[in-house]
Image (cartoon, rainbow, N blue to C red; front, side, top):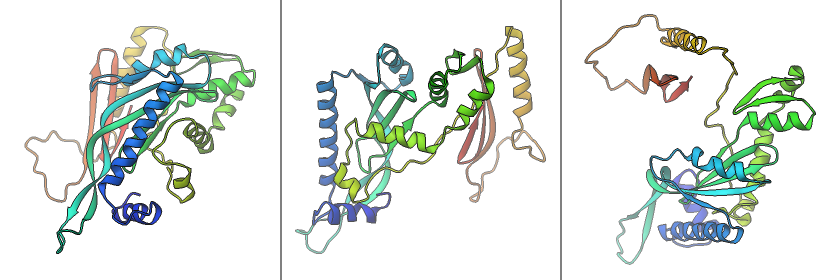
Length: 292
């Protein structure tokens, strides 16, 4: 359902609605929102209503910490821009005949964050948009998965908030980490889709209308522990110096009043941002970004 023609096919051939219209989108969305409300009330799940400037992960963390076992620990509700379908009425010779066209656009709509505590991955969430075609996002942490697998394997370790400070069997821990793959994330996704409300149901899935996971953002980290603040400052200074010319251009210039031509596409830049003790290096290339 990523192109307008397939939207029409979904409504007309699958849902058996002779006139594909925005009313069908509205009906599915309202049913989904009502199901989320009923789910939260029946299971006594806290609902967090996010404001625009909230750091959502910080507000969700206390619910993960208080959880005593696997389950949905909280549901977040936010208004966010999503790429969704909008409908417009197409002109016809007969005013009594209603025809609609569908186009994708960025709209501010309601999204739901289902914060879960998983037996294998620990803290994670699934975000589902309440508007057609219901884009979803899955967030999991590989470090948390590795901690739980190491504990099951009997590997002793000292943990950090997002990694390992030390362990009794580095080779065994590395072997465990190397096992994490797409199948584990798919299992996580399928497990929780069976537990939470979704705008699409099993009838839709049997007809081929379901979510297919793809990598959107991957974060890799290497744990470095400093024994003195000055070493951290020296590390950051060296990192900035080494990465200021990410991409290794043939020539670097400071350009003022740059002329942008019609064939100039995307963004090509390196930006260093320093806030307190945090230094972030962003390398932009066309529509991609690497953040360090």
